[in-house]
Each structure stands twice: as C-alpha cells, then as structure tokens.
Amino acid sequence: MRYVDEFRDAALGRALGAEILSLVEPGRHYKVMEVCGGHTHAIYKYGVDDLLPANVELVHGPGCPVCVIPMGRVDDGIALAKQPDVIFTCFGDMMRVPGSAGSLLEAKADGADVRMVYSPLDALRIAKQNPDREVVFFAIGFETTAPSTALTLKRAKTERVANFSCICSHVTIVPPLRALLESPDLRLDGFIGPGHVATVVGARPFEFIPADYGKPVVIAGFEPLDILQSIAMILRQLQEDRCEVENQYKRVVPDEGNLRALEVLAEVFELRPHFEWRGLGFISHSGLKLTPAYAELDAEVRFGVPGVRVADPKACQCGEVLKGVIKPWECKVFGTACTPERPIGTCMVSSEGACAAYYNFGRFAREREVV
Amino acid sequence: MSAFPAYACSGTHCITCSDEGVPMTIVSMDEQRGLALCADAGGQRHTVEIALLADAATVVGSRVLVHAGVAIAALGALAA
Image (tube, rainbow over all chains, first blue to last red; front, side, top):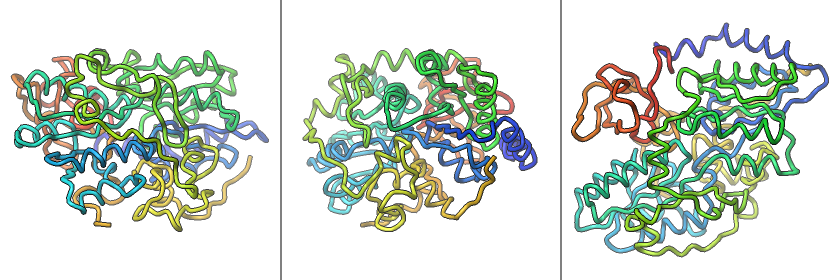
C-alpha cells in the first residue's frame, strides 16, 4: 500500500536492527520508554521488540488516553448518563472502562442513552438533531484530541446549540512525564516521544527532558521502521554522549507544532490545579477544564457530578504498568481475571493499552540475544 | 455484559480509539462551514474539520492527518 509499505519493509527493519546492535554497549542495559500508547500498540503488533537485543528494553509509558482515566471519573460520566433526558456520547473505548459499579456499556444495557461517536462533531450533530434532549460529550485524550473538542465547543457556542455540553477529562502529556522522571522507581535512558501530540504542541515542550534530566528524546512516527529508527537515534545520542530532542517524524511534525491548534486550546481550555491519573495519583496542572467564557458548555457546571475519588481494585496493577515499573504479564491478574473481554484495569481496555496490546499480539515466550 | 458493537472495531484495532491519527485525502470542500469530505486509505468517506490547517494545505487532493474528526497536520508526499 502506498505511503505505508515504505515504512514496513522487512529488509530495512533488519538493517535497522543491525544498526541498533552496533550502537549497544556490551554489558549495559538500556531502558527506553515509549510514551504514547500508539507506539505500544505498534511495537507489539509488528514485533518491533523482536528485532532488539535483549539488553534494550522498551518500557511502556502513560500515553494511552483511556488507560489514565481514574475510576471516579468514569463514575462521574455514568452519573451524567443516567440523568433523565440525557444522551451521553463518548469514544468507543471509553464505553468499556470499568467504574466502581460497572461501565458505560452496562449503564446503556440498563437503559441509559449512551452512544458511541467517532468525533465530538458527531456529538454536536446529535445535539442539533435532538433539541429537546441534553447531549453530553465525554471528552478524553491528550493534546491530539483536545483541539477537536475545542473546535466543537467553539462551534456549539457560535451556533448557540444550548443543549450541548462536555465533561472535560482532557490531559496534557508533560506533567506526567515530569512525575515519572521524578519517580525513584524508574531509571530510564531515553524517550520515544509522542509523534501526534508533537504535531500539535511541537518539539519544544519536551526540551525539559534533556535540559533538566539529561535524557534524550526522539519524537517518532508510528510505523515499525519509524520506531526502530528512533531507537537507533536514542542509542546514537547515548553513544556520542549527546542529549537533545530530535524529530524523527519530520514528515508530519513541524518543530513549532500547530499554532492554530494551540490558539484554539488556549481560548477554550485552562489548566486545572490538579487532576487524578489512574495509578499515578494527582498531578498538578495536568488536566484541562473549560475557561469561564465556555463555562455554560461545561457539563460539570450544568449538572454537577459526584466527583468521588475511587481507589483502583486491589488486584489491578495498572499503576505500575503505566509507570513502566512492571511489564503487563507481571500483573497478578493479567490474562486470567483481566482480559480484553472482561477488563479489570484500564490498560486492558483500549487497543493502545499496554496490557491489551501485549494480550493481543505478544503472548509468546521470546528469547533474545544478550549483547 | 453486552457485546461491544461489532462495527466499533476492525480486527484488533479499535477504529474509535480516541488517540489514533488517520491519514486521509481531501475529496471535496465546504469552505462556508469549514469542513471537508475526506477519504481514508480504504476509501471510506468522513466529514472532517479543517480549521486548524493553513488554506494552502486544504485543497482537494491534499493529504491530512485526522484525529477525532479534525485535521491536525498536513502530510508530506510520503507521510504514512
């Protein structure tokens, strides 16, 4: 397929694997975190880690937008969905995320009007088609999807769609990365940067990682050769004792990001003082809420939500998976009590979740050569 | 628990994944509403918001990266 095959060429992949092998210092163990869930999915889907020497370890980061939503927030969504005359809309993955007493899908089975949408624009269209109902959109995601919500809210305001509102659970990627770098649990050598978040925010927001923590970052695309090349670039920086932000995904990511998107985000959203992340706890200035100019479209203001903090199930180790402290298969309930069909934790829900990605593609014993 | 809607997923990858970028080609424009009709690699058509891209990047035949119904980046000739 044009535009795709070029980045999945097996011979080029093996050549990059050989280049990576040549860059590895014998006896040294490298830990590289892929921040974005899209990378995690691609790594397992294409078996990228099979081309790496055993002492290059890929650690999965917190960049799956579904996986980081805490149970209390799901409960807030379900409480809104159960309000009379509400049509509750959300992305498909969110429907299966367990709250403390079931998921949105189960709320739908119990009679709540919960509808899956592909984009917030679809939710706005449903609002226009149902003027006598309240339509609430469950907005989740990083800086990649936040512009989509922002543009929809602008459109709702301009077109005076009075029955549309949004429960905003958008998050930003930099604060959790800083929290991870401050964590004593984890020693990382470098980061595969999130390519599509960088499309919006550019490369600059990641400069604190080399500047403050001395770790290389390579912003990467999502095809297998993109990921292999970015790993080679990280290892080359380490070999040459360099430490900077490099952009492997230049064909899509401008260094300055998308200025129009950043303007829209600044108009519609402001940072919350703190926001709870699944497994990571409360992180300052890591979540978005609507600015006062858009407060009338804020479902939390319009309806009120329980806002109760709910502890994760004791058996679930999503927090450690999200921090890269353990691998998915090291979780006590992985593949037994927790499966994609009946997830306990969020990491098993989304296809970008590390557990679901490993469950779907990687449940095989693998021997790798140690250098 | 009810089954997850079959149309929501394609193989093992959920098409509704909230953070997935999809390359598409602009088929036609509705400049008045700031929307474009775009086709994905499989030929399926989608209505896409194009307000975040420069005018030069949003002409019929341009390739764009779409996240949740919004084009967030123009793609170069070889972008996947």
